[in-house]
Amino acid sequence: MQTPADGVPAPRTRTPEGSRPAPGGRQRDAFFDNAKYLAIVLVAVGHAWGQLLDDGAVETAYRVVYTFHMPAFILISGYFSRSFDLRPKHVQRLITGVVVPYVVFETAYSLFQRYGNDEPEHGITLLDPTYHLWFLCALFVWRITTPVWRTIRHPLRVSLVLAALGSVSPQIGDDLELQRVLQFLPFFVLGLTLRPEHFRMVKRRSVRLASVPVFVAAAVTAWATMPYMRLGWLYHSDAAQELDTAWWAGPLVVWATLGCSLVMTVCFLAWVPRRRMWFTSLGAGTIYGYLLHAFLVRAGNYTDFYDQPALHEPLGVLGLTVFAAAAVTLLCTRPVQRALRCVVEPRMEWAFRRDAGEAARVREQPRPVEVRAPGEKVSV
Image: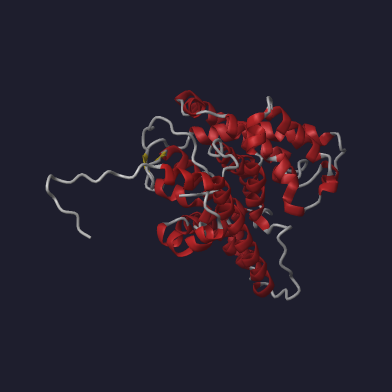
């Protein structure tokens, strides 16, 4: 089943521990499904925490999570895009799995803001992604350019240069969130270059143990740098000049934050279970949780829900965290998938021409020879 991270099947590998057959015979690796589910939970929790940043402890946790939750998603997306090319079947999957959901949900969120927040003048635009939908725009650009990254000699170096150039180019503007497209690009390209053995290295016990002090150091650093480092550097949505910083600091800070994000992503993946868990099957439905959970976040904004004093107490923060995790989990379940598959993963066979090469192969297949017993009559 297609998700933002596995819209294109990766080359087949040896069946790993904890995997199960997917529809069509392809094996699903429990590790990646677990990683996607845990990442989408962190996305939803992070968006909930983002409404309570007046609390120092909450902002510290928010900064730590924002260091790696989207980089992990993007890295896995790149890994599962390794076999993408411009064959018609891949382009069709890109349209139905990325473009169509983006158009549908961008329209839906715009209408929700217009009527839910009483903004009758709020327009519908497909060039300025709402909130979290930037990821679909980015995924489209990254995946459609995959043949380029698979062709050039030093793709990761080139992507790092483009990320640096994006950090000093405020003229790019907000259209299609191209700043994020460029500044997060190295993680997608890195995913394209990874092989299964790299993920086996991440799963080592030594890496898992080493990640504990790294997480502690990250929390201390996030707390200490709050007065000095603006959150925009973690969002990767602005150039250095827009963050009131000298242009030359842009590449340095972007490369530094990308490096920290890579270390934190490795630490996160080290703790992802390798075997099947109760939530493993939900990893195939993360696109549903990703697209839908922001309706709840926006509804809270429109109703001033987050202004309640109780939510700014430790128990209130804990309750909101549990609610966000439970809500996004529910949104990844099979009933939600069945109800919304028509707009999230539509087949749309009527919209595409049949691949001429495939049709020719079907015509060239030899017809089965009918074997009749001696003396058997043929019915007419």
